[in-house]
Length: 124
Image (cartoon, rainbow, N blue to C red):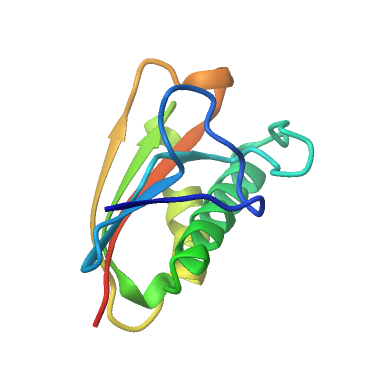
């Protein structure tokens, strides 16, 4: 098992790693829409969702994988009314064979973010 670390995604804001590579599977920690260069959240659900997915992509790339390797995602929304907006953006990152997905509304997210997304990816 190996920790994944890349400067192209925000560093962990707690005692965890950006992702873990088991050899066969990669598990990412939940990614907020934080800009990795500034550590700030952009305004609005669209920008945060897009950045969250870009952050996931950077972690996957650091493990030598891409969105096509993702088999499961979990999307955490501060407001489920944002589902359609996030869904539309999500659909621009995941095409072809789509991963399984769960989407839930949560009471709050770190840094008062609007969305957080995590994934599991497979090699092969």
